[in-house]
Image (tube, rainbow, N blue to C red; front, top):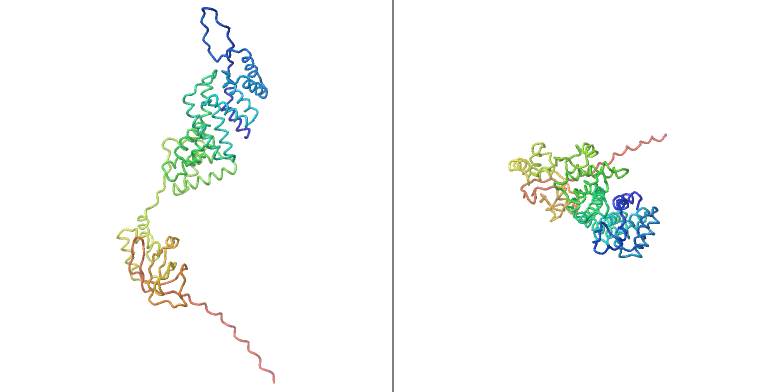
Length: 440
């Protein structure tokens, strides 16, 4: 694990214990006859040898010496009343030596001593997530990170502060570990496509640490991935925020992705640069934050707009099809009265050849892609065998519309005729050079 990650983990999961760890009460002498023993204020080691072993380990300034002392203490006194405290300080010492394997192993030992040890759960959630993100057994490690994260959040509700820890230190520890727990639980939920949980956990993590790109960008994905929802606005905000936080090549990649999402949602990229400027300083969406969503026109609205803005004779077959199938009765009448019985020249794609005088064609690109006929053409005369086109090729023809079915759209055309491109003229030959008459 990178040193910076270990340093973060040390702050979140171990330093508070190392700074506030208290010594156990010294062994008490038996109370005098008739005198009640004093109530202990903290954990008490009754065996002087055990007490001295614990204090000797705790007094070490060198992490390696502390590790040696506490490992020996735990081996000699496996059931000590100070077992959890010893493991806590052992965890701190291993963290300072950057021994990832021992850090994780000690955290597991701590959970055996106390299943709600917040520091141990934070270590596991953080380390397992880091391992998963590094590609080490990603699925399993991410699952374990998520489980530790959710368990840690539960324990934070009820776990008392460690002995001797000041309330302000415990509050700080809870804040730091909450970010770790919510981040691990959120990433696991995102990978499991449980977007509601991912949004819940990752939003809590980002609110705890607004500059944590590691969770800000996944939060944007948790909002944007499920598809169009009312939460896309939050996703776009946190996506732009992530673009501001990112450095290096990732900055451009994130910005391009979020811009594409913004354009799709808004209908254009207008205002995106303003969003980037806003999220450079704003860490959370302000009250009333919104982005206007682009609502595409309905087919009927598109048909009405076509009739208003384009001459019927200049429309494509697909545009005629749209109006005749989706337009108002008035617009349909305008188009059909213009087309009916009039010879039209066009190019369509042959779907099938029913006979030498009957072809099924597709005139719109959508129907060509779907291999669905939308023109039923009857030729005025049979096509000669030598001129017969092949199926799945383009066909240039003339035909007169006689009727149509609006849905699914099929236009029937009669009086069909092939439009054959005239063969190019042969290049003119140069006149033969006239020979001079032979001299006599």
